[in-house]
Length: 120
Image (tube, rainbow, N blue to C red; front, side, top):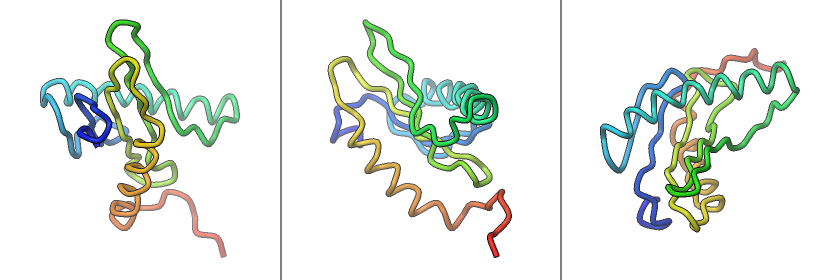
């Protein structure tokens, strides 16, 4: 994904900041993984308090550096997983992150535990 979009860093992490996989600078990836737990809190509160249950993306934007995009991969599974991508200024990301998110979820879903009761 980094090569396809020209991104300096991307990673997959849990809602508790555990780094699952990364490409790019390792130390910075670990810091971003930890920061992602804050995004999880925002997503949980937005669903609970505002009824925004299907958030597909959260981001931080810096005019000089670019954007940090956080995409929740799972909502009803444990652990919750996130795709995090550092996007340089003037680069697109929506299509790339959507494609990668679908592919990752297809691979990872069998390894996750559902947190909602099964429908009968």
